[in-house]
Length: 357
Ligand SMILES: Cc1cc2nc3c(=O)[nH]c(=O)nc-3n(C[C@H](O)[C@H](O)[C@H](O)COP(=O)(O)O)c2cc1C
Image (tube, rainbow, N blue to C red; front, side, top):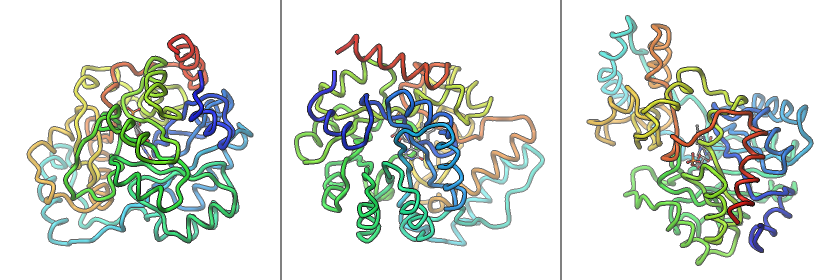
Protein backbone atom coordinates (compact mmCIF):
# COMPACT_ATOMS: atom_id res chain seq x y z
CA UNK A 1 0.00 0.00 0.00
CA UNK A 2 1.03 3.59 -0.44
CA UNK A 3 3.49 4.92 2.15
CA UNK A 4 3.46 8.53 3.44
CA UNK A 5 6.27 9.45 1.03
CA UNK A 6 4.32 8.01 -1.83
CA UNK A 7 0.97 9.57 -0.84
CA UNK A 8 2.57 13.03 -0.98
CA UNK A 9 3.98 12.41 -4.45
CA UNK A 10 0.75 10.89 -5.77
CA UNK A 11 -1.21 13.90 -4.59
CA UNK A 12 1.25 16.40 -6.06
CA UNK A 13 1.26 14.69 -9.46
CA UNK A 14 -2.39 13.60 -9.50
CA UNK A 15 -1.98 9.82 -9.80
CA UNK A 16 -3.56 6.95 -7.87
CA UNK A 17 -0.77 4.36 -7.83
CA UNK A 18 3.00 4.84 -7.29
CA UNK A 19 3.94 3.49 -10.73
CA UNK A 20 5.60 5.59 -13.42
CA UNK A 21 6.07 4.32 -16.97
CA UNK A 22 9.54 5.61 -17.80
CA UNK A 23 9.97 8.13 -20.58
CA UNK A 24 11.71 6.28 -23.41
CA UNK A 25 12.73 8.33 -26.43
CA UNK A 26 11.95 6.29 -29.54
CA UNK A 27 9.99 3.65 -27.60
CA UNK A 28 7.31 5.31 -25.43
CA UNK A 29 4.24 6.43 -27.39
CA UNK A 30 1.16 8.55 -26.71
CA UNK A 31 -0.91 5.33 -26.60
CA UNK A 32 1.44 3.77 -24.02
CA UNK A 33 1.48 6.86 -21.81
CA UNK A 34 -2.30 7.26 -22.08
CA UNK A 35 -2.93 3.62 -21.11
CA UNK A 36 -0.78 4.08 -17.98
CA UNK A 37 -2.28 7.45 -16.99
CA UNK A 38 -5.82 6.18 -17.62
CA UNK A 39 -5.03 3.25 -15.30
CA UNK A 40 -3.98 5.53 -12.42
CA UNK A 41 -0.19 5.60 -12.94
CA UNK A 42 1.97 8.28 -14.55
CA UNK A 43 2.47 7.91 -18.30
CA UNK A 44 5.56 9.54 -19.79
CA UNK A 45 6.71 10.70 -23.20
CA UNK A 46 10.42 10.90 -24.05
CA UNK A 47 10.67 13.93 -26.34
CA UNK A 48 14.39 14.55 -25.81
CA UNK A 49 15.21 13.84 -29.46
CA UNK A 50 12.29 15.87 -30.89
CA UNK A 51 11.83 19.45 -32.01
CA UNK A 52 9.38 21.58 -30.03
CA UNK A 53 6.78 21.26 -32.81
CA UNK A 54 7.02 17.47 -32.90
CA UNK A 55 6.88 17.31 -29.10
CA UNK A 56 3.73 19.47 -29.10
CA UNK A 57 2.07 17.14 -31.63
CA UNK A 58 3.02 14.16 -29.47
CA UNK A 59 1.52 15.79 -26.35
CA UNK A 60 -1.67 16.52 -28.33
CA UNK A 61 -1.81 12.88 -29.47
CA UNK A 62 -1.65 11.84 -25.80
CA UNK A 63 -4.46 14.26 -24.94
CA UNK A 64 -6.70 12.71 -27.61
CA UNK A 65 -6.43 9.50 -25.59
CA UNK A 66 -6.27 10.67 -21.98
CA UNK A 67 -7.15 13.60 -19.77
CA UNK A 68 -4.86 12.18 -17.09
CA UNK A 69 -1.49 13.56 -15.94
CA UNK A 70 1.47 13.39 -18.30
CA UNK A 71 5.24 13.47 -17.75
CA UNK A 72 7.19 15.06 -20.62
CA UNK A 73 10.91 14.22 -20.55
CA UNK A 74 13.83 16.27 -21.93
CA UNK A 75 17.58 15.79 -22.24
CA UNK A 76 19.73 18.45 -20.54
CA UNK A 77 23.14 17.19 -21.67
CA UNK A 78 25.89 19.72 -22.20
CA UNK A 79 25.72 20.65 -25.89
CA UNK A 80 28.01 18.43 -27.99
CA UNK A 81 31.62 19.41 -28.59
CA UNK A 82 32.41 18.74 -32.25
CA UNK A 83 35.84 17.23 -33.01
CA UNK A 84 36.30 16.65 -36.75
CA UNK A 85 39.40 14.46 -36.36
CA UNK A 86 37.78 12.23 -33.75
CA UNK A 87 34.61 11.93 -35.81
CA UNK A 88 36.55 11.02 -38.98
CA UNK A 89 38.47 8.35 -37.06
CA UNK A 90 35.21 6.98 -35.66
CA UNK A 91 33.65 6.78 -39.12
CA UNK A 92 36.77 5.03 -40.43
CA UNK A 93 36.47 2.53 -37.60
CA UNK A 94 32.81 1.85 -38.44
CA UNK A 95 33.48 1.64 -42.19
CA UNK A 96 33.97 -2.18 -42.30
CA UNK A 97 30.57 -2.64 -40.61
CA UNK A 98 28.94 -0.38 -43.24
CA UNK A 99 30.78 -2.27 -46.01
CA UNK A 100 29.29 -5.55 -44.80
CA UNK A 101 25.93 -4.16 -45.88
CA UNK A 102 27.16 -2.69 -49.17
CA UNK A 103 27.02 0.83 -47.69
CA UNK A 104 29.43 3.65 -46.94
CA UNK A 105 29.56 5.66 -43.69
CA UNK A 106 28.28 9.26 -43.87
CA UNK A 107 30.84 11.89 -44.93
CA UNK A 108 30.42 13.83 -41.68
CA UNK A 109 28.41 13.69 -38.47
CA UNK A 110 26.09 16.27 -36.92
CA UNK A 111 24.56 16.93 -33.51
CA UNK A 112 21.24 15.33 -34.41
CA UNK A 113 19.20 16.98 -31.66
CA UNK A 114 19.41 19.92 -29.32
CA UNK A 115 19.85 19.93 -25.56
CA UNK A 116 16.88 21.45 -23.70
CA UNK A 117 19.49 23.74 -22.09
CA UNK A 118 19.62 25.70 -25.37
CA UNK A 119 16.10 25.06 -26.69
CA UNK A 120 13.92 28.05 -25.86
CA UNK A 121 11.19 26.96 -28.32
CA UNK A 122 10.80 23.79 -26.26
CA UNK A 123 10.53 25.79 -23.03
CA UNK A 124 7.86 28.09 -24.52
CA UNK A 125 5.92 25.07 -25.79
CA UNK A 126 6.00 23.38 -22.36
CA UNK A 127 4.88 26.54 -20.57
CA UNK A 128 1.97 26.83 -23.02
CA UNK A 129 1.00 23.13 -22.88
CA UNK A 130 1.44 22.72 -19.11
CA UNK A 131 1.88 18.95 -18.75
CA UNK A 132 1.50 17.88 -15.10
CA UNK A 133 5.18 16.89 -14.95
CA UNK A 134 8.37 17.77 -16.81
CA UNK A 135 11.39 15.55 -16.15
CA UNK A 136 15.01 15.87 -17.18
CA UNK A 137 17.83 13.42 -17.83
CA UNK A 138 21.63 14.08 -17.88
CA UNK A 139 21.78 17.15 -15.67
CA UNK A 140 20.07 20.20 -14.21
CA UNK A 141 17.93 22.67 -16.17
CA UNK A 142 18.79 26.39 -16.19
CA UNK A 143 17.42 28.38 -13.20
CA UNK A 144 15.16 30.45 -15.47
CA UNK A 145 13.78 27.22 -16.98
CA UNK A 146 13.00 25.87 -13.50
CA UNK A 147 11.26 29.14 -12.61
CA UNK A 148 9.24 29.33 -15.85
CA UNK A 149 8.07 25.73 -15.52
CA UNK A 150 7.20 26.16 -11.83
CA UNK A 151 5.36 29.39 -12.59
CA UNK A 152 3.28 27.39 -15.09
CA UNK A 153 2.33 25.00 -12.26
CA UNK A 154 4.46 22.12 -13.56
CA UNK A 155 5.99 19.53 -11.17
CA UNK A 156 9.66 18.87 -11.95
CA UNK A 157 11.62 15.63 -11.73
CA UNK A 158 15.24 14.82 -12.61
CA UNK A 159 17.38 11.66 -12.80
CA UNK A 160 20.36 11.14 -10.51
CA UNK A 161 22.89 8.31 -10.40
CA UNK A 162 24.75 9.60 -7.30
CA UNK A 163 23.96 11.51 -4.12
CA UNK A 164 25.89 14.50 -5.46
CA UNK A 165 23.73 14.67 -8.61
CA UNK A 166 20.58 14.33 -6.49
CA UNK A 167 21.73 17.18 -4.24
CA UNK A 168 22.37 19.37 -7.29
CA UNK A 169 18.84 18.68 -8.55
CA UNK A 170 17.34 19.41 -5.12
CA UNK A 171 19.36 22.63 -4.81
CA UNK A 172 18.05 23.71 -8.23
CA UNK A 173 14.46 23.38 -6.98
CA UNK A 174 13.58 20.07 -8.67
CA UNK A 175 10.54 18.58 -6.88
CA UNK A 176 11.39 14.84 -7.00
CA UNK A 177 14.49 12.84 -7.92
CA UNK A 178 14.56 9.63 -9.97
CA UNK A 179 17.25 7.37 -8.45
CA UNK A 180 18.53 5.57 -11.54
CA UNK A 181 20.49 2.46 -10.62
CA UNK A 182 23.19 0.83 -12.76
CA UNK A 183 20.72 -1.95 -13.62
CA UNK A 184 18.57 0.48 -15.60
CA UNK A 185 17.97 0.19 -19.32
CA UNK A 186 18.75 3.04 -21.69
CA UNK A 187 21.08 5.96 -21.15
CA UNK A 188 22.62 6.47 -17.77
CA UNK A 189 21.57 9.83 -16.43
CA UNK A 190 25.16 10.69 -15.38
CA UNK A 191 25.73 14.44 -15.58
CA UNK A 192 29.34 14.07 -16.79
CA UNK A 193 29.87 11.00 -18.98
CA UNK A 194 33.66 11.45 -18.77
CA UNK A 195 33.85 11.35 -14.95
CA UNK A 196 34.39 8.06 -13.10
CA UNK A 197 31.09 6.20 -12.76
CA UNK A 198 30.38 4.87 -9.27
CA UNK A 199 27.83 2.48 -10.86
CA UNK A 200 25.55 2.41 -7.82
CA UNK A 201 22.76 -0.15 -7.96
CA UNK A 202 19.11 0.81 -7.44
CA UNK A 203 18.99 -0.64 -3.89
CA UNK A 204 21.95 1.31 -2.48
CA UNK A 205 21.22 4.50 -4.43
CA UNK A 206 17.57 4.60 -3.37
CA UNK A 207 18.46 4.23 0.33
CA UNK A 208 21.24 6.79 0.06
CA UNK A 209 18.95 9.39 -1.48
CA UNK A 210 16.02 8.65 0.86
CA UNK A 211 18.36 9.26 3.82
CA UNK A 212 20.03 12.39 2.51
CA UNK A 213 17.67 14.44 0.39
CA UNK A 214 14.42 16.13 1.32
CA UNK A 215 12.40 15.64 -1.87
CA UNK A 216 10.60 12.40 -2.85
CA UNK A 217 12.79 9.68 -4.39
CA UNK A 218 11.54 7.57 -7.30
CA UNK A 219 13.42 4.28 -7.67
CA UNK A 220 14.33 3.15 -11.18
CA UNK A 221 16.39 0.32 -12.64
CA UNK A 222 15.67 -3.41 -12.79
CA UNK A 223 12.09 -3.16 -11.45
CA UNK A 224 9.98 -5.52 -13.54
CA UNK A 225 7.02 -6.61 -11.41
CA UNK A 226 4.89 -5.88 -8.35
CA UNK A 227 7.39 -7.51 -6.00
CA UNK A 228 10.03 -5.05 -7.22
CA UNK A 229 7.66 -2.12 -6.74
CA UNK A 230 6.78 -3.25 -3.20
CA UNK A 231 10.50 -3.67 -2.43
CA UNK A 232 11.52 -0.15 -3.47
CA UNK A 233 8.57 1.38 -1.60
CA UNK A 234 9.83 -0.50 1.48
CA UNK A 235 13.23 1.13 0.91
CA UNK A 236 11.51 4.51 1.21
CA UNK A 237 10.95 5.32 -2.46
CA UNK A 238 7.79 7.30 -3.16
CA UNK A 239 7.22 5.52 -6.48
CA UNK A 240 8.83 3.11 -8.94
CA UNK A 241 9.72 4.04 -12.51
CA UNK A 242 9.75 1.12 -14.97
CA UNK A 243 11.14 1.29 -18.50
CA UNK A 244 12.17 -2.12 -19.83
CA UNK A 245 8.96 -3.66 -18.47
CA UNK A 246 7.05 -1.57 -21.05
CA UNK A 247 9.35 -2.11 -24.08
CA UNK A 248 7.52 -5.27 -25.18
CA UNK A 249 3.99 -3.90 -24.74
CA UNK A 250 1.63 -3.56 -27.71
CA UNK A 251 1.85 0.26 -27.64
CA UNK A 252 5.68 0.36 -27.65
CA UNK A 253 7.42 1.79 -30.73
CA UNK A 254 10.06 -0.98 -30.51
CA UNK A 255 10.35 -2.62 -33.95
CA UNK A 256 10.21 -6.35 -34.70
CA UNK A 257 14.00 -6.82 -34.44
CA UNK A 258 14.10 -5.16 -31.00
CA UNK A 259 11.16 -7.24 -29.74
CA UNK A 260 12.78 -10.42 -31.05
CA UNK A 261 16.05 -9.56 -29.30
CA UNK A 262 14.19 -8.80 -26.05
CA UNK A 263 12.63 -12.26 -26.16
CA UNK A 264 15.98 -13.95 -26.94
CA UNK A 265 19.05 -14.97 -24.95
CA UNK A 266 20.43 -11.47 -25.57
CA UNK A 267 18.15 -10.30 -22.74
CA UNK A 268 20.23 -12.30 -20.24
CA UNK A 269 23.38 -10.33 -21.06
CA UNK A 270 22.73 -6.60 -21.15
CA UNK A 271 25.79 -4.43 -21.78
CA UNK A 272 26.70 -0.85 -20.83
CA UNK A 273 28.17 0.79 -23.93
CA UNK A 274 28.78 4.26 -25.30
CA UNK A 275 29.51 3.04 -28.84
CA UNK A 276 25.90 3.43 -30.01
CA UNK A 277 25.26 7.06 -29.05
CA UNK A 278 28.33 8.62 -27.41
CA UNK A 279 26.98 8.27 -23.84
CA UNK A 280 26.91 5.16 -21.66
CA UNK A 281 23.65 3.27 -22.10
CA UNK A 282 22.51 -0.24 -21.21
CA UNK A 283 21.53 -2.34 -24.21
CA UNK A 284 20.61 -5.91 -25.04
CA UNK A 285 23.75 -7.74 -26.20
CA UNK A 286 23.96 -7.12 -29.96
CA UNK A 287 26.34 -6.75 -32.89
CA UNK A 288 26.68 -3.10 -31.86
CA UNK A 289 27.59 -3.84 -28.23
CA UNK A 290 30.11 -6.40 -29.50
CA UNK A 291 31.64 -3.74 -31.74
CA UNK A 292 31.90 -1.51 -28.66
CA UNK A 293 33.83 -3.98 -26.50
CA UNK A 294 37.33 -2.91 -27.55
CA UNK A 295 36.52 0.79 -27.94
CA UNK A 296 38.12 3.34 -25.60
CA UNK A 297 35.68 5.95 -24.27
CA UNK A 298 37.88 8.75 -25.58
CA UNK A 299 37.60 7.39 -29.15
CA UNK A 300 33.83 7.86 -29.30
CA UNK A 301 32.57 11.27 -30.50
CA UNK A 302 30.41 13.33 -28.17
CA UNK A 303 26.76 12.51 -27.59
CA UNK A 304 24.64 12.80 -29.72
CA UNK A 305 27.12 13.21 -32.60
CA UNK A 306 28.13 9.54 -32.31
CA UNK A 307 24.42 8.64 -32.42
CA UNK A 308 24.28 10.08 -35.95
CA UNK A 309 26.77 7.38 -37.00
CA UNK A 310 24.95 4.72 -34.98
CA UNK A 311 21.62 5.52 -36.62
CA UNK A 312 23.21 5.53 -40.10
CA UNK A 313 24.79 2.12 -39.43
CA UNK A 314 21.47 0.76 -38.19
CA UNK A 315 19.70 2.07 -41.31
CA UNK A 316 22.29 0.42 -43.59
CA UNK A 317 22.07 -2.86 -41.68
CA UNK A 318 18.27 -2.87 -41.63
CA UNK A 319 18.13 -2.21 -45.38
CA UNK A 320 20.10 -5.46 -45.71
CA UNK A 321 17.80 -7.31 -43.28
CA UNK A 322 20.10 -7.15 -40.21
CA UNK A 323 18.57 -5.73 -37.01
CA UNK A 324 21.61 -6.16 -34.75
CA UNK A 325 22.72 -2.50 -34.93
CA UNK A 326 19.52 -1.00 -33.48
CA UNK A 327 19.56 0.89 -30.18
CA UNK A 328 18.06 -2.02 -28.27
CA UNK A 329 18.09 -0.42 -24.83
CA UNK A 330 17.09 -2.65 -21.93
CA UNK A 331 17.85 -3.09 -18.24
CA UNK A 332 19.14 -6.10 -16.34
CA UNK A 333 15.57 -7.30 -15.72
CA UNK A 334 15.00 -7.71 -19.48
CA UNK A 335 14.27 -11.47 -19.40
CA UNK A 336 11.21 -10.63 -17.25
CA UNK A 337 9.69 -8.23 -19.81
CA UNK A 338 6.13 -9.19 -20.70
CA UNK A 339 4.22 -8.90 -23.96
CA UNK A 340 0.71 -7.56 -23.37
CA UNK A 341 -1.02 -4.19 -23.65
CA UNK A 342 0.36 -1.36 -21.51
CA UNK A 343 -3.01 -1.08 -19.71
CA UNK A 344 -3.02 -4.80 -18.90
CA UNK A 345 0.58 -4.60 -17.71
CA UNK A 346 -0.23 -1.70 -15.40
CA UNK A 347 -3.21 -3.59 -13.92
CA UNK A 348 -1.03 -6.69 -13.45
CA UNK A 349 1.67 -4.61 -11.74
CA UNK A 350 -0.92 -3.07 -9.41
CA UNK A 351 -2.32 -6.49 -8.46
CA UNK A 352 1.16 -7.94 -7.91
CA UNK A 353 2.26 -4.92 -5.86
CA UNK A 354 -0.84 -5.11 -3.64
CA UNK A 355 -0.32 -8.84 -3.14
CA UNK A 356 3.34 -8.25 -2.21
CA UNK A 357 2.70 -5.31 0.17
C1 LIG B 1 14.23 1.98 -24.29
C2 LIG B 1 14.56 2.96 -23.20
C3 LIG B 1 14.62 4.30 -23.50
C4 LIG B 1 14.88 5.23 -22.48
N1 LIG B 1 14.82 6.57 -22.78
C5 LIG B 1 14.86 7.47 -21.76
C6 LIG B 1 14.58 8.84 -22.00
O1 LIG B 1 14.29 9.26 -23.13
N2 LIG B 1 14.63 9.69 -20.94
C7 LIG B 1 14.90 9.25 -19.66
O2 LIG B 1 14.91 10.06 -18.73
N3 LIG B 1 15.16 7.96 -19.41
C8 LIG B 1 15.13 7.06 -20.43
N4 LIG B 1 15.36 5.74 -20.17
C9 LIG B 1 15.71 5.33 -18.79
C10 LIG B 1 14.48 5.19 -17.91
O3 LIG B 1 14.00 6.46 -17.52
C11 LIG B 1 14.73 4.40 -16.64
O4 LIG B 1 15.79 4.95 -15.92
C12 LIG B 1 15.03 2.93 -16.90
O5 LIG B 1 14.19 2.41 -17.90
C13 LIG B 1 14.82 2.14 -15.63
O6 LIG B 1 15.35 0.87 -15.72
P1 LIG B 1 14.54 -0.39 -16.31
O7 LIG B 1 14.62 -0.22 -17.79
O8 LIG B 1 15.32 -1.54 -15.79
O9 LIG B 1 13.13 -0.31 -15.80
C14 LIG B 1 15.13 4.79 -21.16
C15 LIG B 1 15.09 3.42 -20.88
C16 LIG B 1 14.80 2.51 -21.88
C17 LIG B 1 14.73 1.04 -21.54
